Image 1 (cartoon, one colour):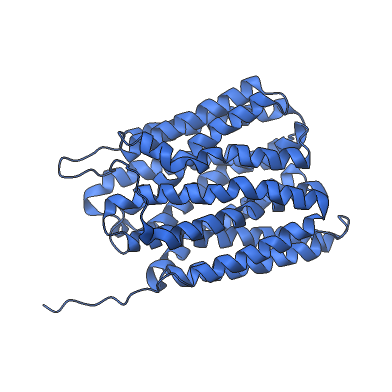
Image 2: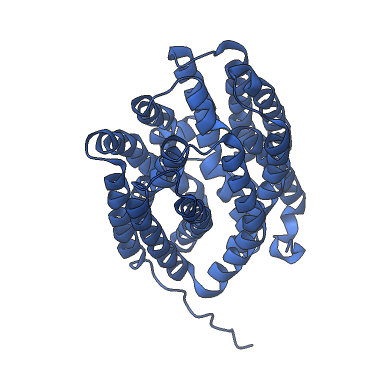
Length: 403
């Protein structure tokens, strides 16, 4: 699964440090990401509060291309270290100072989100940098698999040992998540540069019209993402009363599968091109959200419906793996490798313009006409996303050079 010949020969040290960082980031996310929805419920958030939180939490993503430009004096590795330290500070402060849904809580969620969002465009940009030409998607898939293994390692104790019924129960997990983030930051900070050209180059602000399709796909992805991240888990917890253990088990099963699935998905993208996988992911998402719309009004006592909803959530997680094709599309479109990272950061901003607006609109729809219409809208958005992905150029045939 982890093939050494996938990496650029001159960047093996940086590849090792990157994978060490990805491992600790997987741990950090495993300790924290499993618990958010139930944590929100424990601190007393209502549906309106939940949909208010998401636009506030996504503000750093909205401004990401400007934040990245402001940090452009740093190499990507050191910028990643800044991101992880920021995440750790937010998590530690959340553990010490928060006991309910209040302005301090909202502020610290923005701080955590800032760290996470700074790292978003860096992650795959560094991965593409250390990859051998033609193996970029495979390397990204390997990174996903590494993160998944450690995510799983952090999830298992939550499943078996964690009750999660009081605010104090969550604090030790925030401390563990912060510690892992600091270790990831140390690994990223150790990534060096070379005199002949930087292994992890500096960032600069780039916004070119040739990337218009990538920006548009990123924007629509932001709309689609909120169904997966916000409304589907909220439906399972609030409408179908699924406990923390069930949600964690769902994440664990998904993580185990993703460990094997993502490298294979990366291989398929390298072999067949990103368009086919992006289109397939969009069609799967549309079918899932349409089914959510039909089933979400059923009785929470119906065990078959609950199992189907959990299975659909699991499948939707797998379909998210196809999104790595967006970043490979940028690599294939770029005329200069230095454009890749800033273009990805601009894509993060486009994604989060949608992420700021859609939770508020979705929350309004949920509370006024019913949750099923949120998922109807999600199915339509996924179809539009699919149509846009069909415009991505197909894989060009490799022309062998004749000696």
